[in-house]
Amino acid sequence: MDEAEFDRYAIAYEEQHRSNIALTGEEPAYFSEYKIKLFSAWADNTIRNVIDFGAGIGNSIPYFRKHLATVVVTCADISQKSLEYGSRRYPGSEKKLKISREGIPATDDFYDAAFSACVFHHIPHSEHDFWLRELLRVVRPGGTIAIFEHNPLNPLTQRAVNTCPFDENAVLVKPRQIEAAFRRVGWLPLQTRYHIFFPRFAAALRRFEPSMAWLPLGAQYSVYGQKPW
View 1 (cartoon, rainbow, N blue to C red):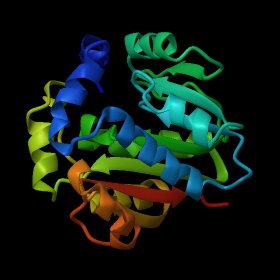
View 2 (view 1 turned 90 degrees about the vertical axis):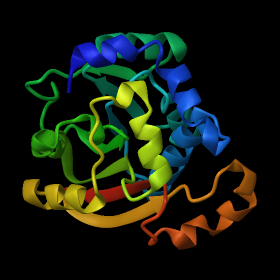
View 3 (view 1 turned 90 degrees about the horizontal axis):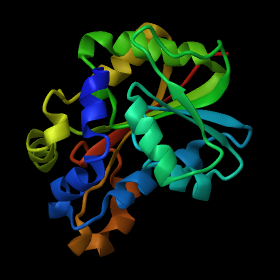
């Protein structure tokens, strides 16, 4: 992960993202909220705190507040400018944590859960094990992890990533690669699901999406796992 790269895009991120997903008919908020809604449905009601790994400019903050209002959220990112801009956009009680190349500056077993929204395709694949091991370290035994990513099998997703300025150095990740990395470092993969099948003009069909979660054609996917007890 390149701190300077994400510092450079911090303020422009939202508008570039909005332009890049225009073909879906949705605003960035739609994609941010659906992830948190799913995460909140999976989350154990004993969760007290969560680390948002790669929180960027805070797009998930309003939806953590809406769907997991009692949970303490730590926004963690390698880009200090992104964290500062996120704080200006959404002032509040969320904690901020600056990640370095050396790892996550948090004590072992501190968090109940980890969440990551379309971050790992920005991380060199050779470093995935390191960061997943770091997340394993800072999440308590029995705690959970949810990784959301772009689906490289979806041609519209490939187009969006290939034309997006802040994805210029990104390499898409296949679900089985995340699952394999989970197993290598000690996470237990629990489920993999696919999401976002229909654009806004076909929104009436979205009620069928939960039953299509097995179909590897959704624009994004999630891998949900647990740290062994």
